[in-house]
Structures are given as structure tokens and as C-alpha cells.
Image (cartoon, rainbow, N blue to C red):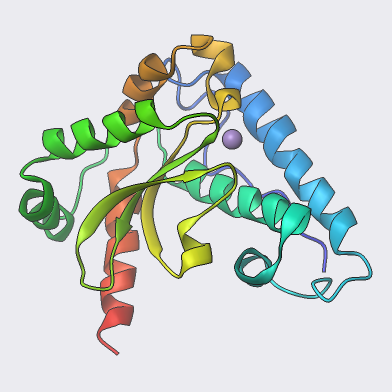
Amino acid sequence: MRHVLMELPYAQNALEPYISAETISFHYGKHHATYVNKLNGLIEGTEFEEKSLEHIVRFAEGPLFNNAAQIFNHDFYWRGLTGRPSSASAQLSDMIDRDFGSLEALKEVFFGMATALFGSGWVWLVVTDENKLVIESTSNADTPLRHGRTALLTCDVWEHAYYVDYRNARPEYLKSWWRVIDWRSVSENLADYLNDDTV
Ligand code: MN
């Protein structure tokens, strides 16, 4: 089974001025695309050749895991962004207020973890088995899916996500990323999880 680079749900200039078309041309068109090409080469002749991306993320090791998880993480990252105004559902807003106090407080925790993350990785808004919202970071390609956890939102803090627009200034990138979060997508991820959870 060949894995394919996802279609972006918007034009490459849709997130400007916060994330430039040039950044997306490198980040999506080069980095993300390379993970897909590498994975397709790596799965040949292995037990993962006909497996889904999620299966590879859950069970593979080494380069197979790294490339598959990076594809999964980037697909999720792009789907969590929009150039259009968006707002959180009442359900998501209520849970944010309950677990963080306010959206502003959530942002502070998120940015603190993203700034403190040493090296390359990802920061996530996750919903736990107890239906509590928490913020977590993972190193390199690691991802909540690997640990059976459900992510609602992620920020890519690999330097390749921001060097074109912000050089090495991760905090500047974070502020811009915050402006293009698709809160409707985050809300839908939460609703999907809570609906599944009632089974
Ligand atoms: Mn990336």
C-alpha cells in the first residue's frame, strides 16, 4: 500500500501573514513529503507493507516508526490550522475553563511547554481517559497515538516549522501559530472522542 502526501485543506498562502507560503512550501512540500517518500521505501518487503499508517505508528520501531509518526503528526498539524476565523464549541470551552481556568491560561501552559521543549518535538492538547484536558510534549517523532492517547491539537516545534519566517525565534512562531488554530477542528476532535467514549 503506497502512502500519499495529504492534500492541504487550504491554499499555501492561506495562513499568511502568520505562516508564510514559503514556509509551507518547504514544510509541507519538502519535509512532510520526504517522510512519505521514505516510508514508502522502508515498508517494502516488511510486515508493514500493507498496513495502515496508524498501525505502523502504533507498532513499528526505528526509521519505520519515525517516518510514519512524522506523517501522522504533520497530517494532524495541518488539519488543525485555518486562515479563517474559528471558535471553540461550548463543550470545548467548558472543558478548557474547567481544566485550565481560561483559554488564556491554557495558552500560557502550552507556550511554556513549547518553549521549554529541548530540541525537536511536538506539543499537544490531549484528552485523557478521564475526559480531562492536558498539555503534553513529545520528542522527535513521538506521538500520543503511540501511547494510546487522543490528541485534539498539536504544534510542531521542530525548527523546520519556523526557520523561514522566524529564524530561531520559537516564541514568535508560537504567537503566530496561535492565531491560525482551527478551533472548530479541535472541537470536532473532542466531540468525536466523547461520542466514541460513550460506547
Ligand atoms: Mn514539521
